[in-house]
Length: 309
Image (cartoon, rainbow, N blue to C red):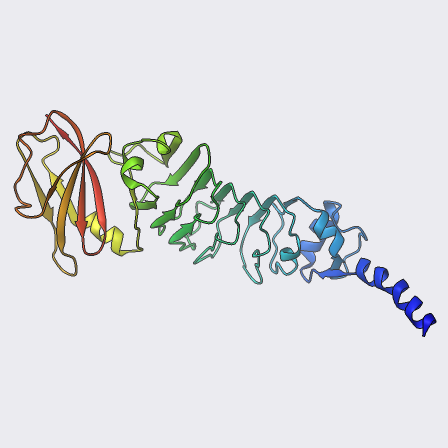
């Protein structure tokens, strides 16, 4: 019995040290060998798990990986460049809770769940195949679990409707979005964000493309896919600039009801609430300056800056 116990005690460290991570994709494993991450240096469909745990930076740029099995064992990664994604078989990244920077090129992604990446600070989704049809149909990016997230670069994501930035505590935020449809940016205080007040005064949001007459994003405390965009597109306040009256134009009444209009000054201070006569809202008693009009409907809100002369 003592000999058996001694034998088991001898084997346990050996078994622990011999744990392996399966890497069935040969291109993936070859890249790991090139990067000196696969210590045995042989394409044999596996690497030591200790090799995966030791890696903090993994750059797969220029490597066409078809099967990402094994990636989820790289739990100490801080920087990950997936390069061009053609096939997303077994792309599991739920364990990468230390990941701070993530980069990849245009892919066939229909969704991309950022929420497991709680340490994420930077995300870049690029497109270097400008002549090819757009295959990515991502509609939402949710960074509400990544409270230190600070940098987003996206290029050619025409279906993107929502960026969730709730709970963010980063010192500054830089977002570069593609020119296209209006994107709802969900924040804790949409009035402060709209007016560039703290903590949003250190946020920089720019459009990647030709200069346009109006931004293709807006802030809200409750964004909903598609419905929020419908509200944004369906209501218009005119004239702007205005003098004595403004009117709310509603293109269609199907499925949405105008409830009220909240008027706030440039500091975010509430001025008054309007609950009727939306076709002729009296503003003659307001001082000259910029005001925020929040159109409230049963399907969502729309905020718009109005200049009163």
